[in-house]
Image (cartoon, rainbow, N blue to C red; front, side):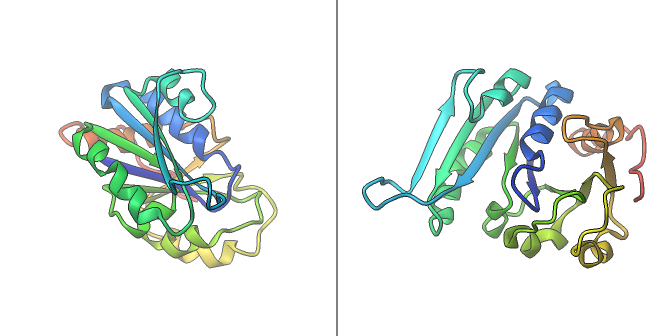
Length: 199
């Protein structure tokens, strides 16, 4: 199974959410991939660098190992080379029992089994990559829903209707209902232990 987790802005806890999902579901035998796009000078080639993390204490991907991931990778990509990057991790996805990827932009080239979109109502920024793919989300993870309304709240509200929504007190506190939802997809023979909380 391929799960993609992406948020509307950097720094809203996507990494923490992925980490806690791995920690909450050891049976899934996760392989975790973090995709980061950044600009490099021409001399700093290649534009796509895939690194397997071996140290649970490392900054990029190490926290996934510490949480229980079987393997963790960091993929650094220069903008414009994402398709090449996706090709670089295709074998990882194909040979892993379950893969969880922290990225929005990967959705341009893959159709995951599950896309979880993270929305933090306390953050004003709303990046274009999330806006492009938000309607494809299979479920929404909502953080700080009591925060003052952002300008984008009315824009996303119609998309939330009719889809599972899970309210998170913070990015590092995963509700049991979200874990049950994922378990029902990974192991459909088991009934989900709860329903998503409506916003």
